[in-house]
Length: 534
Image 1 (cartoon, rainbow, N blue to C red):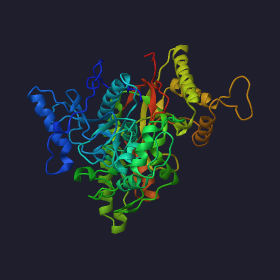
Image 2: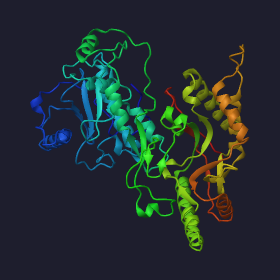
Image 3: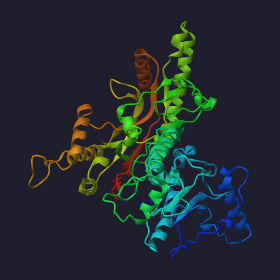
Image 4: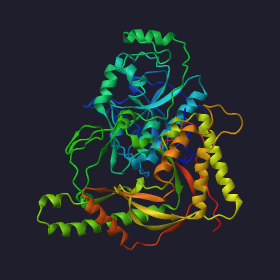
């Protein structure tokens, strides 16, 4: 089981220290099905609330708190099989009340989903600690019931309720049985709050239909469900490799929410009222061709890991308000200019600034791309340790001032100019620490070395050298928006327009560094606090 997230509140994640007694209830304990069988879980949630109001114990409930309820699955597919759901008709702050499936999730749900998953892990750990069993957690990519529910199931999968191939595949396929960590990583990787998670239903159905029934321990393929069940009962092979939970799931994609008329103002074009997935499919505006990396990793952008600057969150609020104001002003000026144009075609191709979401704003300090997740765990731990030692020594050597001062909005990167970024001036101490990080990444091993084993972090070294070919020094900036449409002349005019504007003064002390992007498999602390002299 994965460890709990240290940043999650324990108010709704605690479970009793004593044993949770698992007693599978009889079928008669469950409510009668409504006319639509897909509403079965809603009927159960109604029964749970009715029992609570009457002060009665409900046999179908294993555990509940003021926000969540864990019930027994009516048709358990293993020795232990429960469903965790958000309770109905509760007043607690949160946004998961109307979440029917994974398709309704967006980045703003991330913190509550982490809380939800932490409670599930605590329940699973309680059962594991009192019985020699192993639990796993997951969502069905294409669920049979609503609302959103998380399966907590033991890995034995020994049950008379397994009667069909889909029962086997839906709990053994690491793609169809979506791990909670994959959901969290996907939400963390969102490049806009306006994006909704999207399950690629056709691909998920294909996984369910075409994946062979294989033993989860020895990988033997069965010819029928009875054959699979007979083998599953007697197989005692111990898997040689433990599958990692921390990975992206290729069945998860993104779709964009339709924007309101007000939100759409100033953008290059309105989105279709129908939702289009970012998966190389046909959209209203043609076919989006994915790069090779996108095909292999679901979306190349979500794989990048970096050390980011921790500072007062109000700074990002100010920057977000600033870029939205600038985008409106530029659009209004452009509209006036193009109204005077005689060419309708030219007017349609006007250049616009598309602001990014407040949720996505951050400042990258040291870029590590996909390297950190490709490094051996020993190297990851050593890199973390050396970075921590470097920060501590840098803090102690002399009185330090880690600060940033906003300069202006510019087009970025140089000579390409497709982003609007807020450029900052960093204090000399912050620049000096960055240079030390580069030295760490490029360092050779001490002691005896072989021709094939010279550097401490060979993958990180290659990436850092490649970065330095393009940017010889760190340019502190926060990406605020994208430049869309227009000609080269329009882009040059926008750059000059941005440089001539007057902006509010913004300065801040840097509180420390933390990890952004997908977390590596090694469970270690990635917070590096600073001590400022002022």
